[in-house]
Length: 383
Image 1: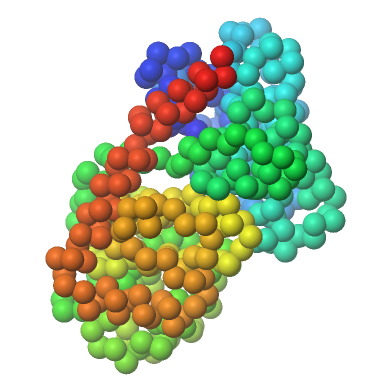
Image 2 (image 1 turned 60 degrees about the vertical axis):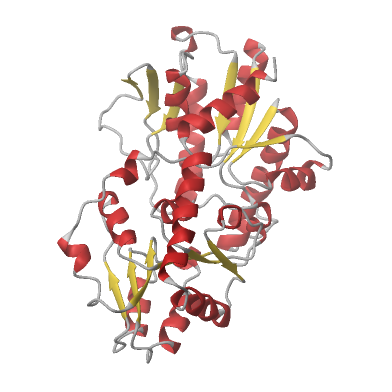
């Protein structure tokens, strides 16, 4: 949301961005104040000091959400202008309560932006019972949010179907996917430590960059690596960290066709991807993906200009729209192997076209300036 908010400011809009400092994906300055304001050009960013957590599926995360909401209600709003539009962007569904409150106080428009489908994600990924009190509470908040919002926005392309299933009737849902900044991929710098992960020339390299944990569905991929261990001209390189990494390292011990490296700095990932011939990603066969995906990894892969094999059985988008790779059924090693051979045996110029198409498509459809303008135009339709 930060980058969309910044683009809104570049369009001349007055934007106040409020967030919690418990987000482990972002860095915030240390300090003792509860309410802290920073300015990025014209964007005012208010971040609230909240209770910290480490594990995504934990009671501490739930407490952190509640702490953030409590401090939102205690915020001195007299210091800020009356809003015309309030955008509530999940992960935490509790913020929709504050959004509905502001809508009533200021008679403003309410946008409910869904970036992670809760509580369905808790049920599908973490095995939480659908009768768990937290799941029931989040389900109630989700229904209220969908019904009360003037506009529902989803990063996943088929969220409309989920909304209909939850509230029992159709409601318009606007798709605003995750964006990219082209500059992130303009400068690709060689890195000796990355080069050291790759074999000598002459091998077809299948690469993976990302987390190596339970949510990444890598068991079938490692089965493929084992089954292709006697193929002298196919090599696998993976980089990343995660809970399952030690188990996978043990599993491939003694195999000569694979290298598992450390988690890379963000600036080194484009170079790593550029060294691969084919890129692989996977997702569990989950009901969550019935409504589409918004995977950062797929955008990074396509921006690297390489063909992609995606082990994914959900609602298809991006890769098929750009003709930049292939989807294969989730959890099917035979299909993965077939896809690897498909690209390996392809004429290099034809294979290169898959990457060119993917990069061109993402630049055209996922640039933050383009996304922000579409988002703004959709918001203006409410008035």
